[in-house]
Amino acid sequence: MTYAAFRSIGAYIPEKIMTNADFEKLIDTTDEWITKRTGIRERRVAAKNEASSDLGFKAAAQAIERAGIAKDEIDLVICATVTPDYLCMPSTACLIASKLDLPPVQAFDVSAACTGFVYALSIAKAFIESGMKKNVLIVGAEKYTSILDYTDRGTCFIFGDGAGAAIISATSNKDEAIVDVNCSSDGNYNDLIQTPGGGSLHPCSQEVLDQKMACIKMKGNETFKLAVKTLTSDVQVMLKKHNLVSADINHFIPHQANIRIIQAVGKALGMNEEQTVVTIDKYGNTSAASIPMAMNYAFENGKIKKGHSVLFDAFGSGLTWGSALFPFSPK
Ligand code: UT7
Picture 1 (cartoon, rainbow, N blue to C red):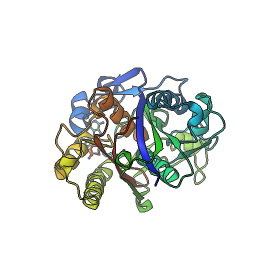
Picture 2: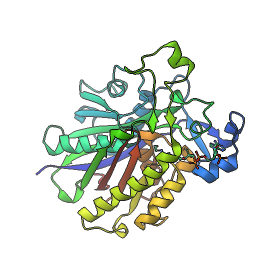
Picture 3: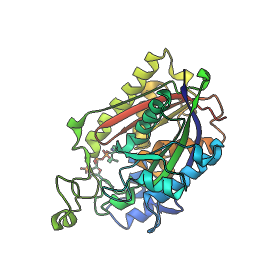
Picture 4: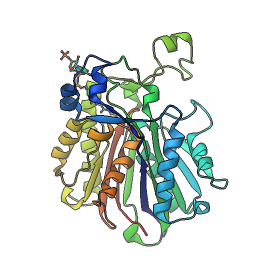
């Protein structure tokens, strides 16, 4: 039997920092309100000439180096993003593969918003377990500042830019195996988080530009309630299925959308502060990059060690959601 092992993690954090004080100059808000309601203190902003593929490329290069594999051993590249370099084509995954100087390789994007990295992980696992691929590079890369409306005071201060990446490889050792990845969606809630214009329903037009319809619009409060409910039940199902309790998890890594969501979910699940990885204060919400950036943060701080159990818990536009349970298994 072939299993899929989570071999390495990497990230790229753009240099430029935008603080809550910077938003006080842009919108009717205060540092105190943003910190209290979201936990965000600052977020990163990619340079003008940096696109999502540039962020993803740097995160991927680090993940490849840490996995200790040769570039030509990678046989699949998946990029989770909703801020691709190009609206329709080519895919950001193709651009990342090119920037990494990989030989010709299967490469494609996944669109599942903030759940994208967990969706990519589920695909990597399936490709490897089926025997079709051996080393899969998965990337979550977002330049959210490219779809923000800086006059929308309910949304613009939440999101930031960044990327995270991982190498998932075939193994015959069951102890290294990704235990489970469970993803789902409900398109009936598609209107909660949208970029309403610029796609095939409302193609780019003067109206789309004038009304900033290609920017993200979010019904924050409704989304908040569903996020807490879904992120909690998702993990409860996962733990029950594998006869585990919260104390069996070394690192609980929820999507970084709002500290109040993370705390409410953590409390409902019985995850303590030590177990729960939090980066929302530093990076804001980076959508598909949020979970791998948080994992990389914990890894670089010496918290995540070989064999530790990790639990991802994601939720985003679609609506989409997903969780993943695995031991960190570097070689
Ligand atoms: O990543 C995908 C998943 N995303 C999420 O899960 C996001 C979930 N939602 C949230 O994180 C929160 O809903 C927000 C942070 C977006 C908003 O916080 P909230 O506590 O839900 O605010 P609200 O929209 O209910 O508004 C409460 C009050 C309103 O004032 P009144 O009517 O009570 O007087 C707003 O006008 O806060 C006001 N407000 C602000 N005040 C200062 C809204 N935005 C701001 C702002 N600064 N930026």
